[in-house]
Length: 329
Ligand SMILES: [Zn+2]
Image (cartoon, rainbow, N blue to C red):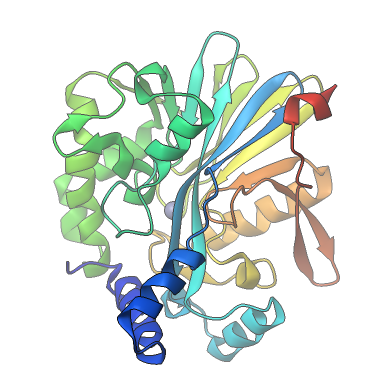
C-alpha cells in the first residue's frame, strides 16, 4: 500500500522484525506476543452532568515522529524522552459514544481495515459496551481523514444503516471535489481516494447532513470550527448540568511534543499554519476554562484536562473509576 502512512507501516514492520530477532524460537515468540496483547474491553464510561459518554477504542498505531513538521528537529527526541516514550509513538485512535436523551450519537467512526491489524477494534469495543452499529442514530464526524471515517464502511456495506452523518459543509465540499485531489500534496492524495470509498456512500444514500461553522446540533451539543488540520475540521462540545466536555478531534497527534511546542505540525495537516494557530488557541482556552477534553489521539480513554505550567501545557488524564454512574451521584 503506497500512501502517506508508509512511514507508519514501515515502523510497524521494523518493530515486528526487531521483536522476532531477539526471540529465536517461534513458539516462545508466540507466547510472548499473547502475553503482550492487552485484554481490555475497549470502552470506558464517564458522566458529563446527566449524560453518559463512552470512550471507544479503535486500537493504536505506531506513529513515526518523522511525520512531524518542525524547524527544531532535535527538540522532538528530547520532548519524547522527557515523557518516557520514543518514536514510533503508540498512538490511540479514540471514538466516543454519547447517550443523549433519545439519541445514540457516535463521535468519529474509526479506521476499519485501512491501517493494519492494530486497529479496526471499534466494532468490538462498541459491542462490549452494549451497543450495535444499527442502533446508532447520529454520527458527528470531526473530519474526513480515514482514521475517523474508515469505519463507516465494511467493504461495500454501510456499517451504520440508520445513522445521520453530521459533517461541516466545507469539509464535505473539500474531500468530495476531485479537483482538490489534483492540487493536494502527493502524500495527501490517498485521503481523497479513501474518502470516495468510505464516506461518499453515505452522501449517495442521503445520510450526510452538513452544518455551517458553530452550530447547535442537539440540545447541549454544539460544533466548534477548528479549520487547519482539514478545511472543515470541527470539535464538538457537550454540556450538561454545568459540566462540559469538548471532543477535540485532531488538535493533537503526538501530545508529548505538541503540548510543549504547539507550533509543531504534521504531514497530514492540509494547512499547517492554520493548524498550529488553532492548536495554540484551543490549548489556551481549555487550560484557562478548565473544561474536560477528549482528543482522538491521546492515550485511551482520552478523557482529561490541560493545565498551563511554565512554558508548556500538561495533560491530566481523568482518574480511573470502576462505576461511572455511581461516581456521578
Ligand atoms: Zn486523526
